Image (cartoon, rainbow, N blue to C red; front, side):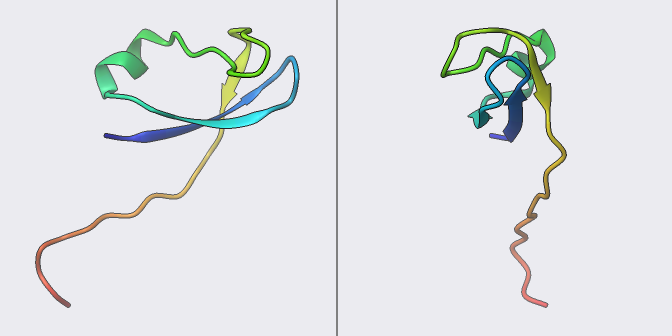
Length: 54
């Protein structure tokens, strides 16, 4: 499942949310500290794991 990084625009807390893409598309993310929905998604890196060795 994908991990999404957010920052709350109200209290400035950075946090991560692990959720399926179907939940991400609904856009119902709240800050775990203050409970506000005023959050901004942050740009983050990602890693891909394959079964073949290079």
